[in-house]
Length: 507
Image 1 (cartoon, rainbow, N blue to C red):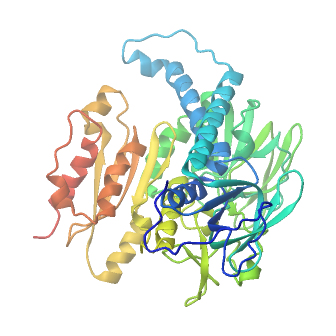
Image 2 (tube, rainbow, N blue to C red):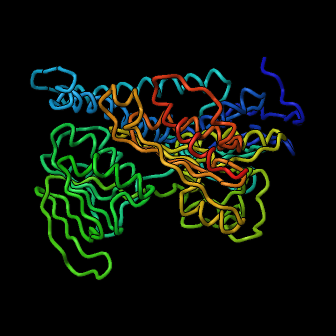
């Protein structure tokens, strides 16, 4: 029997056999209803159920949401397989070890099957975990119907069933954003949702956008022999990355590969077909630049929240470009305006909040929201949440950008410290013949506090976690510089940065 959460009132559950709203005044069908079963909703439902709450989780599509079915999981499976192809096909790199491999062959369908099977396995495991926790899975599309009320339109039959819950968490996630003027057909012009299926390999593919999604799929497609044209509307490729990291990463991930990268141009019109036609215009002047004809286009222009069918008006919530405003406890606010009132018993987590659109951010938000529902005050520290791009090599970051760190330094009156640590001085990276990498560490020169880090290089996604832990604890570089790192490992790149920074700290 699961323990009842301390500090929570015992709730009279409905005895109605059809799952309809409890008749008794003040009673609820569930302590908590979570709308959406992606990583944010999953962690929230599991955490709440494990703490004695009666929980239901509503999902109209596949359990696991975008991450498991159309994002993190299948894309990393494709990157793992295509990465092996890239390694085996890199004759010059292998020759450095004295290895000479036969011509590389691969089977596209088996690579696609690897991704599909991984999705099925993780989705099944996640579903079983939810069920074992004691949460009820309601299959259908959920929406609000006033305070503490949720209506679920059941999948297939269209039957609508109302439920009452003491608290409701919205975790409906996001969908790919397709800009105006771009037509998709799911085959020749498509988003990452379809790209993870790897149904075919276009000889020439254009990727619109050079953020992490565009970069990861460019990595996959070029490894498997496709020619790529990358189209970026902003004035530089990889605009969301630290400029120093972007410079070295672009040299390796774009310039050295079969990629034609174009910045400052807008894909004003894309029409599916054979070939696909792309009308490019200058981003600033909107003057025509060129019409491209390619075999396929991947639209990787960001993501938009899934919130328009939630009936948020029924509880007095105004979204901001579709994003649901929340405070640091994840309680929903009436609007994004300063001083907006919180909506009692209503919470939101994950991409739909627009805070950091990452699966692990959603999961952390889900846990924090439930802790606050349980009466255990907690807030989320976004600065300490790392991000990674799983290219070969990887890119990662945590904390403040250099621009934001400079602004904070000016505001608070301290001197910003910036040091760089290079993979070319690291024994393990040299042994791997993968020494082209950089770590940039940002810190407060007065206190030594770590403010952020940006890394490009071998296993950057793993290395960033050490810095993320330091940011979470608000640790200083003087203390961190005394910690012993295993030799020879890539973690010494971080150690060197800490030691450089410690020598620059005042006093």
